[in-house]
Length: 280
Image (cartoon, rainbow, N blue to C red; front, side, top):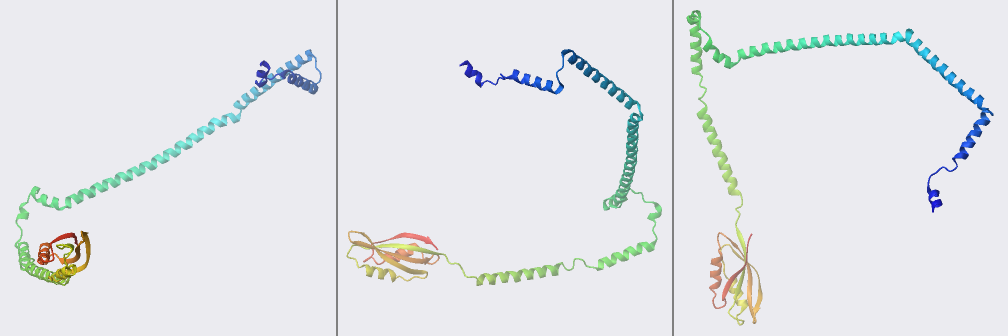
């Protein structure tokens, strides 16, 4: 059980073999070296790294103190100065735009005040607040005569004299249109309300002559009455009833009148019933 469990586990059992193979590979590449030589090689590598680090530090210090190092900050200062100059130019242009807008607003306000002064409401209220000077009260007679002549001319023009004529013309047009409407209405076909009625006419017994009964029923002639199809329907015990269709005009023939006319034939007719009644 333990071996089976270890088989499924991810354990590097052969790691020592790979370590030996790696050590042998490096020995073949570098040759066999003794322990003391290995220590000397390690010390030389450390000294070489320290020398490289010193050289790098000296180079970095020399680069920061050289002419290239001073060019960085001066370049930043020049770029900052250019940006400040561009911002100042933009600020001046914005100031000019603001001044133009202020001038336009002032012109609009002046124009609005002029329009308010020249409006009719201002003219109507202005005489109430103004004081009339004595020079304006004493007008020359020539100026007074001219408005009087204009008033006479206005009186001579009758602005409302055509109202009666307009009323007469409108009344005449209205009468003509009413007459035309009445003529059109008279020419239209009048809709007649009609109804379809199915009558059940029952005889006294089975010995009643049904042909004679139907002839008696169809002999009824009324204005607005039209007889239609008929048939004999068995009731029972050899007795048959007459079902007959008719169309009547509602204004001329009523159901009560139709029943009275059919029941007049008492020798053949026992009763009359309305089997169906439909509007057309």
